[in-house]
Amino acid sequence: MSKVKYRYNTKSLTYEKVQIAFKDRFKKLLSYLATGTVFAGVTVFIAFTYFNSPKELAQKREITELKLQYDLLNKRMDLASQVLNNLQDRDDNIYRVILEAPPIPNDVRKAGFGGVDRYQDLQGYDNSDLLVETTKKLDIITKQLYIQSKSFDEVAKLAENKKEMLANIPAIQPIATKDLIEIGSGFGWRMHPIFKTMHFHTGVDLVAHEGTPIYASGDGVVEPLASTEDGYGNHVVIDHGYGYESLYGHMSKIIVQPGQKVKRGEVIGYVGSTGLSTGPHLHYEVIKNGERVNPVNFFYHDLTPAEFQQITRAASQPGQSFD
Image (tube, rainbow, N blue to C red; front, top):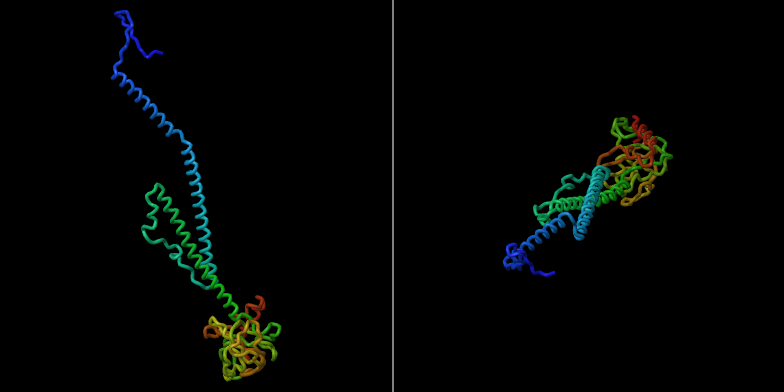
């Protein structure tokens, strides 16, 4: 098609060749360019506003997945925190109570972190608050886990010591129930069988035939033999540690030596009537931190509840002591 343009002249009734100036051509070109630019801009705006590119779609999917993972991570941290709180509660109110240890103060368990600039590196981002809160929560859990771990180390050590302590503390009747004739006299004020005066009986008299085996009531070390002039006659004192001692008086024969280590239930001698005694029996005492305590309260290891109640009632009866 020809690019030459003609115009019909009504006056001369002829066609005249149209001559377009360069300036007009340039203006027309600019108008085309402006129209195209506006149209292109509108098209791009609509495309970027209402339609996603493949890269944007991939990024949105990634963001959605990251949000899901963040929510799951927060839930896991919350669950870990709940489990940790449960462990802390059991540690303070069960384990440490049983092991006679003070609980860890709450201000130690829940202590914050020092320094205002601790999380400064996380500032300046669109999601800085989110990053700081998540990191802070993780730091708190980490610190509490460390404190709880140290606490469990201490509890394990206490339990190990408690195991040894429970083995050492006097806990059995030093004369077997099958060999016991009766409880002659218990702990408390009693009439002295020889002097006929009231005195405080510092132990319990276990009546049995002469030669009946006497057993150590707990693990310990035999102390050096003391004088027999105090009325106990042949007697043995065992140091159980932890402030506990046990005394076995009026023995007919002693078969352990001073400094010897003995185990609970080991035979240390035999029933007799030496010293200030009116008949064969064992005078048995438990000493805690230098003070005599009622030995019957320590007959809990090898007796049934019914047997323990029977022993307790018999030991509480008034009457004469055998020594």
